[in-house]
Each structure stands twice: as C-alpha cells, then as structure tokens.
Image (cartoon, rainbow, N blue to C red; front, side, top):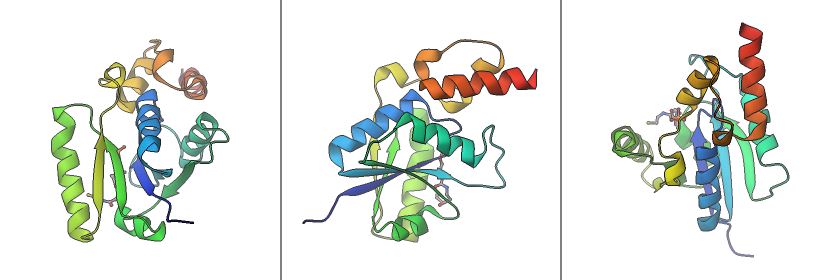
Length: 164
Ligand code: PNS
C-alpha cells in the first residue's frame, strides 16, 4: 500500500466551532487523514480543560476513521515529527489572520525546513466566527446554535449556567 497523506490541523479548540469542522472536512478532500491536535498549554487559560475540549471534538466526529483527535505539548514541529508528517493545515478567515499565520508558518519552517503549511478558506458563513466570539456570546446569554456542534452548544450552556 502507498503512503497515506496525513495533515495535522493544530489549534486551541476552546471550543471547536463549525468553522473548524468546515476546515477539517475540506482537509479530508485533500488528505487521506487529518489529525486534529489540541494544544495542551498549562500557561494559557482556557475555558474548557484539555479533556473537555478533546471530548467535544471526539463527539463531533464520532466514528470517522479519517479523522484522529489528539493533543500535543511543546513545539508543533516536534509533534509533526512524532506523527511522521510535514504538513500543517490552518484556516484563513480574513486578511487579519494572515499576518499571524504567515509568521507561524515561516517560524515553523525555520525550525524544520520540510514543514509546509496549507491554508484553507472556510465557507463564507463561518468567515467571521471564532471560539473567542462564541464564548463571549454564550457568556452574555446570546444564541448561536448554528455556529457550533450540538455537543458544544450543550457544554457552553452548562458552563455558563454553572458560573451564574
Ligand atoms: O487555535 P490557535 O490558538 O490559533 O492555535 C495556535 C497553535 C496551537 C497552532 C500555535 O500556538 C502552536 O502551534 N503552538 C505550539 C507551540 C509552537 O510550536 N510554537 C511555535 C510556532 S510559531
């Protein structure tokens, strides 16, 4: 059998949104497998713990063999090496994303020359969506059920009703 084309789609996923889901599904059109890897970063304050973020991602992609849900710590390039791939997928929503993404792509390549970053553009419906805005809207009682997987909608409602 030939080699599988594998890409890693890294992110904070705090929480996963339909914008991420859209990029993952587009990635599957290009790669045999997409590894969705959540960053475990003790110094960053997330709303959801790593376990909660992973659980929501797993429930979103229940039984899809071509998608692997995982986490990583430390440098992304080291994780790519562990997974035996050189390809990173990232979503580009707008020009405002470009600067930071360009910097990350070049920094990763300067750490390891073979790294390629593939930018995918999400559906226009999600081009203004971010985990940060989703959290803010839920926090103040807003409703954007269509922007997140059902499990995330449930968990966000539960999280903010606990806090009140
Ligand atoms: O969803 P995010 O927060 O935009 O994802 C950012 C992420 C996790 C892809 C980025 O912070 C990352 O790769 N962190 C790992 C540490 C690392 O490798 N840093 C150097 C890359 S420039």
